[in-house]
Image 1 (spheres, rainbow, N blue to C red):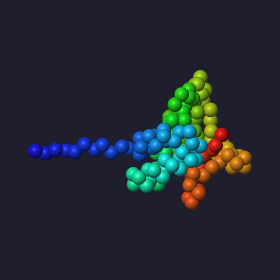
Image 2 (image 1 turned 90 degrees about the horizontal axis):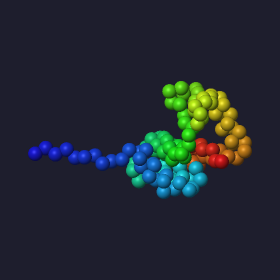
Image 3 (image 1 turned 135 degrees about the vertical axis):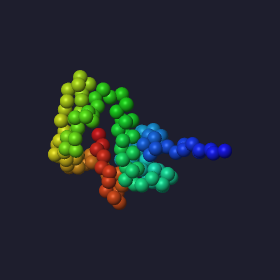
Image 4 (image 1 turned 180 degrees about the vertical axis):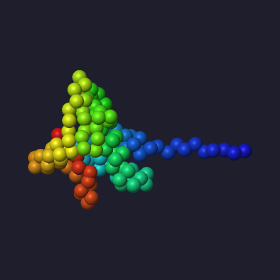
Length: 125
């Protein structure tokens, strides 16, 4: 008899969501640091994959009841299009976002999650 085992392994995004839910009251940088560390150390997930999974999971949890969303069909590698609750498109070019990050750094609001790698960067507010 051939029996195929069922793969019950969770995707990195799902694990990240669970870990972030437990640490959702931490500040962004700390919650992401804990989540990335858990994925890397406890689940043997690469740091690059863990970073993306944690960032995406954080964004999903942070935006749960938000009427605005990023329009993936209109966004490109050089522009992010945010649709407000009434459908109005708001444009953020790569230059716009780069300037916003620099302004956050100047104001002390840009935080690095991992002091050794200096990445990822999150904006505290």
